[in-house]
Length: 368
Image (cartoon, rainbow, N blue to C red; front, top):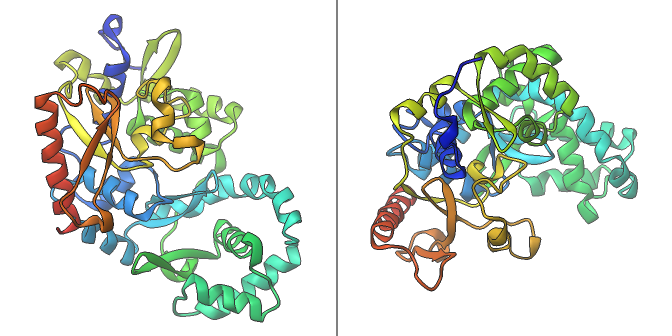
């Protein structure tokens, strides 16, 4: 375990800026879209437009079409590897991650599946129907659901999406190329031709190490929640890889991170004046069980109004969330509007100028 200096001056702002550095949001970033996704381990992606920008923020000079192209070429893949939530990740990682998480995910949905009257026989029938439909090609979700209906499998009341989710979690189907803002469904083996096989304990250890390197400083509970791995297995994995990480203590809790990220203490943690316009659902906020380090609890309802599960776009400054922002209707207009938590005083002039540069970057990314 690497020794870390500067612990006495550790603060929420420093933790936030170290996370930005680990995630490629400070410094040179990543060289390509696949590098960014692989380097981040996995990125939350239920909102397609949001994850396009999340990747774009980490790859200087990239455009939305670059991220879309990577999805179309299977250089990155979007599926349900953990927590029953869509993420983008490297294609070679999906199969072994599903081997670790899918049984627990499906068991956790057993009650809902009973309510939807989904039996093992139904899943087998849906699998046969789906694989016949997409053999050598692709199908839209609507086409897949129509095929389910013809085979006697109702898709009403979320039954269709649950059938699709089970087939994806079992490694039979995966989301493939884009058709507009929807992804077509393809056979897993046709779309992902190279998959790694990793033992469960080795896989969890690798997953945890990669998480702390890409998301640290973070806690063992952050990882256990993020990956959906039981805390006992998380702690066993941490014992195996802790010698490859650095440890910080803040308010009595251990935070783990890459040694090179921790080394920024000695050089002076960068980013104190950096302003970023991040998308909703970005890993900077969503990648942790405890978000209070970077988001003051009294402002949490401004990010997720009414607790509806829809995360607004965030303004980050100095390593913490200081407000939200709204993009233009349709995504290509000129109106990118900051909404700071301090509505009375607004953004300071320097921050307002920096946000303007971020808005221009966002418009360029969209091709405006």
